[in-house]
Amino acid sequence: MPLTLPPSSSFSFLSPTAKSTHSHRFFTIPHASTTQLAPKPPPVIKTAPVIVIGAGLAGLAAATRLNSDNIPFLLLEASDGVGGRVRTDVVDGFLLDRGFQIFITAYPEAQKLLNYNELNLRKFYSGARIYYDGKFHTVADPLRHFSDSLLSLGNPIGSVLDKLLIALTRVRVLSNSYEEIMSADEVSTIQLLKNIGFSDSMIGRFFRPFFGGIFFDPQLETTSRLFDFVFKCLALGDNTLPAKGIGEIPNQLAAKLPSDSLLLNTKVVSVDSDDSNSPSVTLESGEILKSELGVIMAVEQPAVDKILAGKKQPPPPPGQRKKPARSTVCLYFSMDQDQVPVQDPVLFLNGSGKGIINNMFFATNVAPSYGPSNKALASVSLIGLYENTADDDLRAEVIKELSGWFGASKVESWRHLRTYRIGFAQPNQSPPTDLMKNPNIGPGLYLCGDYMTSATFDGALVSGRRAVEALLKDRALALV
Image 1 (cartoon, rainbow, N blue to C red):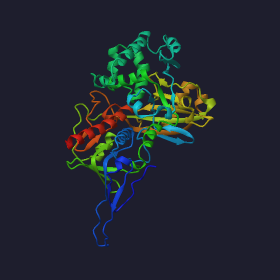
Image 2: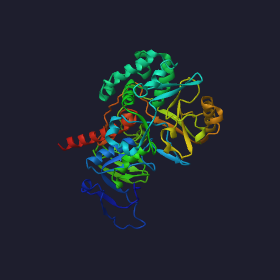
Image 3: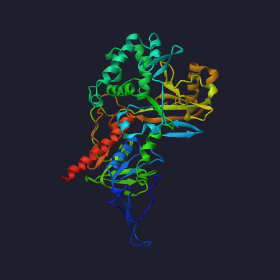
Image 4: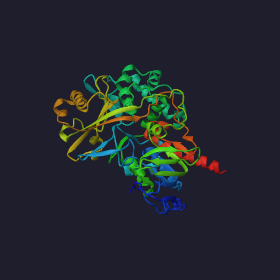
């Protein structure tokens, strides 16, 4: 089980044998006895080869890489569990992911790190059902649902030419490697779609709610690099949910680490490097941890700014200043099975251009394990934080809109379970962007997180690996 760092009055030094046994052994040297008149002893100092701050996907990926190289480490997490933004709560027998999150099986880094069979991934329908002009219209992947795609050619969600352009876009992104995509010339997603020739109706009724829901960006200002990356992953893989919730992804990574390497409820308040290659970490408890090889900060950008407040940081690239983070609100509702209007594992999009709902789906249609056997679960997503709207008012407006979609007789009986307001759902990655940032920001200090690469599950995993690779390269050069 993960450990909570205990208070101590001793100096502890990590045994060199730890890297071969994967067990962190400490030698303890007791302090000399003191009297009541003695000055307060200095903070306890513990030493570890590498300290990783934050047990989200990026921190877990960094820890996984260190563990594979037999390098001992401490992984510090301020909360009571791993995952960061990727967590699942259990409420009245339902699995509630913290915000709208879908796992795409074609993520290249995830394929290297995760055991998909153990995750028991449940697939969404490869397409979407779009609410427009008082009706639902289907958009389907022709390679997976050919007959559905033929039937959709004449619907009002774009023209036949638009659907041909989607096929050509698929060919274009598949012809480029992921590395080429991440370093390609960029424009905003909306500009890319216009450059390709998509109609306003296709952009407004499909691309805005679909990719706007992925990026939490209805204006589609996100870089075209990220659009191409996600489009390629969607072409090659499936949209899925783990049967036990999205939080099972970080749980799987954490389960493979040495049990005594993960310290929960351990909040870091500052990192001090004093121009050495061995930064120290100060905990909220007052304890100090000293790294031997380096510190990897795997927390969100706002947390990095807070921990390093007053210390020298590299300036952001031109155009990267003052970009507001992407935010979202996610509401969950339970219902009896006979109150579910559809049985398909499909994502519903709001293509009407009206209302506050962006997308919704019935989670138990995708993965029945998300609720008790006789119940169903609906997940509804809004883009933005709606800070000036009370939870009750937001819930009432959502119920009103969904009643227009599915009928008041069904929706009004739904029971609200929980509302999540997520202020930092994703970093803002509108152009100009650098999706291959240098992890090293100072002697022995490295950053990782999706803001360092791409704002995706895969980007977080890649950033953790790259931070460790940069640390190991720097330490190898220092020994030459």
